[in-house]
Length: 555
Ligand SMILES: NC(=O)c1ccc[n+]([C@@H]2O[C@H](COP(=O)([O-])OP(=O)(O)OC[C@H]3O[C@@H](n4cnc5c(N)ncnc54)[C@H](O)[C@@H]3O)[C@@H](O)[C@H]2O)c1
Image (cartoon, rainbow, N blue to C red; front, side, top):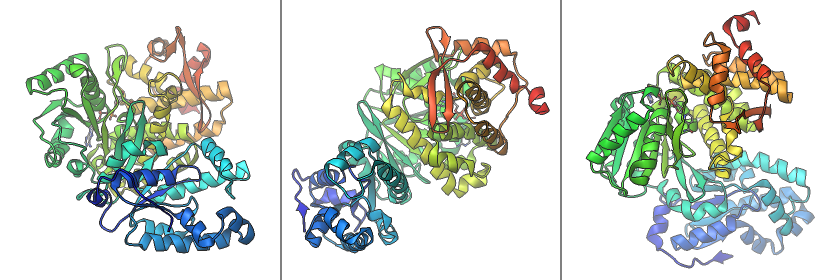
């Protein structure tokens, strides 16, 4: 057996802790993702031997994979690979494995992988192509076929992975968080999505029951100070505090009134004074339990209290679970302009438990669909497909789970990928503002009282899609489909609000201005976003007017 002996071992006990009883740590991913190296590194950290199924197979075949492949064909190769991998997954002594990129093509292998802790290592397709060229792999001879194969396999990898890492070089940081998945009390359906940041990264745990497993998933024993809105605190606060106290102490919970009106500097000052009175120190963790309002407000407090303390986000609305809890934008509103004061402050941990959505009022659940649609338009591909097929969101749906969980995960992956490439919002991250210039203008022009954020985003998306048709030739089908989906989910597709001139004034105040000009995010097609676009004022005026209730009714 071609084994790689671990170097700085931290002991068998650590290895046992990293995986459930009898289960193995299995690295999966496409060609060139760095699985062998990752397995070796994990083996070193855990004091275990790591094995590589491709190397073992070459030993068994007595020749390089490429030549066997060429002489006998892919089917014969897959047969030999399947037999070896199934044996490996049963072998009692082997704890850390790197699987060949195509091993997941086998249904039997995928079934067996469900019993183990699979870590999917993603890789940039171009980098994968370059690396695969260097190693002469048989399925890396034509670029178009290589990329199509990757697109298909990603879904297979994701279907069996419990941890999804954006790149192999995040492993060292992520490994302790991966190991947490094997802790007692952590539901088997919990998934870890690793968020890459400039200074490292953080784990996002998604799945039913992660709130109740907070204590098991918590990284250390630092004291936790919770900030929650009153409603969420009464529904879920105790469960979180009880779970956390299995691992860390919870000296106090500060509550704020529910709703956007709490996102003010005055409220931030009140919260921070309460934290100071309760004795919160720099080494403590601030836990934001609630929707986007609490996440933004408490995040801002965490960013500024004693010049910054650790933040954990526990999002409880759909908006927060698909969007606001990730990426580190925190802040409060000014009277005239939304999110005008704030700071970047990445969380250290996010726990997204979709079962919490079952207590969310239906109108809030529906409002969250706008952010889902926005993210799907940005992502394109499978997320856009999936979102078009979603049944109307209702509490039953929230309880039922699977399509919702997959949608949440897809949105989180999209957001983490964008933010990971542009954490400080200097370029690509602006794409996440799709539909938001008009949405923020509408919210501000109506004093943040007339529309939920998600409702304003629904209208903002329609304005944006209309402008995209006008400016970039977006297929009208996309707007018509978006309109239909928003209706299906009970969201507004027209409004009878403030005068267009007032909205344009507020739009001009929006932070997305560059050099005094309005900088818009538009769409060429789902999955193909254009940032920094300029539209004529008349085109913007027309797109807004189009949504006026009387005009919309006449359509
Ligand atoms: N930071 C970011 O990147 C980002 C991204 C998108 C939106 N946002 C911000 O998010 C805010 C909107 O967030 P939101 O839509 O979550 O609103 P929200 O936080 O006000 O929550 C909406 C309502 O739902 C209630 N609620 C929350 N969770 C509940 C639960 N599980 N059960 C029952 N009731 C529950 C709350 O008490 C509140 O009344 C806006 O201020 C927006 O600017 C921030």
